[in-house]
Length: 394
Image (tube, rainbow, N blue to C red; front, side):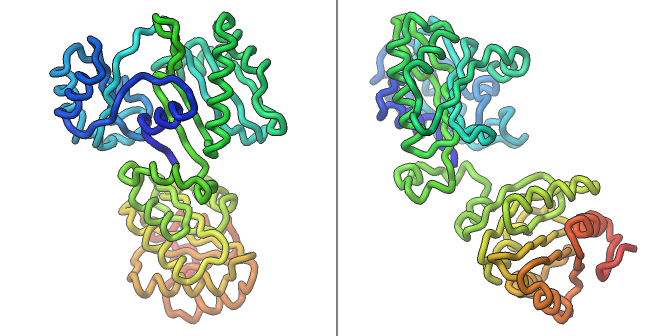
C-alpha cells in the first residue's frame, strides 16, 4: 500500500523529522491562501499522485507570487500527469501540496527498504540525490552506500556515523544519527516496505530537511495499522485491484492477454513464467489464497474478465488447503452465470483432484483441461488463436 507525499511528510513530522512547512489543497484559491499564510517569497507546488518522476513531468513547479501559486495549482488539479512510473494516460491529479521553497546547500538520497535476500532492513544513502538518482545508481553504483540492519539489535549509532561519513556529513554526524534513528523507528513501527527521502537536504541555514517523502507499507500488516489504512487513496489504484482486495484476493493487473487464476504466490509466478516461455503474456497476477470457495473463484473470474485485453483464462490450482472440487464448482458456476466466452484452460492437482475433474467433465461446458503446468501454459497460449478445442491441440 502506498500513500501520498504529504501524508508521508505528516508521518515524518510526527516522528520528529524536519520537513518544509506546507499544506495540501484541492483548489487554486486554497493554494493562494496557503502561500500567503506560509509567507516568504518563493513557493513550490507539487502534484500529489502515487508515482515518482513528477519533477521531470511538470508536476513540481516554483512560483514567486501567491497568484502564480494559484495559477500552477489550477493547471495541475483535474489534469492527468504522466511520468516514467505511470502508464501513457497518467494519473489524475486531485490535490497539490503547497510548500515554502527551501534554499538548498546540498542534497542527498536516503531510503530504507526490506531486502528479501538478506532478510534485513537496509539503509541506502548517497551524496548524489535529486531527480537523476536512478541514473546515478545505474552508472555509479559505488555512490550508493548501504548499511544492513541486524533485526536483533536495530540500527546502531556507529552505522549512522558510517552513513554520514560516506555521504559527506561527518561534521553533522550527531544530528544525522538522531534523525536516522527516528526514521528507522518510523519504518519499524508502521511496517514499511519502503521509506524514501529524495532529496534529503542541508539548507543554506544549515538545517537537515526531508524535502520529499515516499512510503510503501506491507499489505499483510495492515490489520494492525489502522491509522495507515485510513490514509489509503483508492482513486490512485486500479479499480480491479481494489475490488479484489475487498474479496480477499491478491490481484495485480498486467499488460498481457492470458488471465491467470492461481492459488499461491509462488505458483502464480511460475504460471506467468510458463505463459511467457510459450509465447504468451499474462494479463494479471491473481492468487485466490487458501480455502477458496466457489463464490471466491467466481469473483476471481469476474475481476479478471473486467480487463478487456483478456482473451483466454488459465486456472492453475495445486490444492492443499484448497480442494479441487471447490475450485471446479467455482469454475463451472462462473462460466454459467457470467456467460464467459473466452477459452478457459483448467489444471487441477492435489486434494480431491479426481472429484474436481469429474465435475468439469460432467458440466457440459467447453472447458480445456490440462495435465500439468507446462501443458496448461501451452494450451492457454494456443487457445488465443483458436488452436485448441476440447482439450486437444489442433
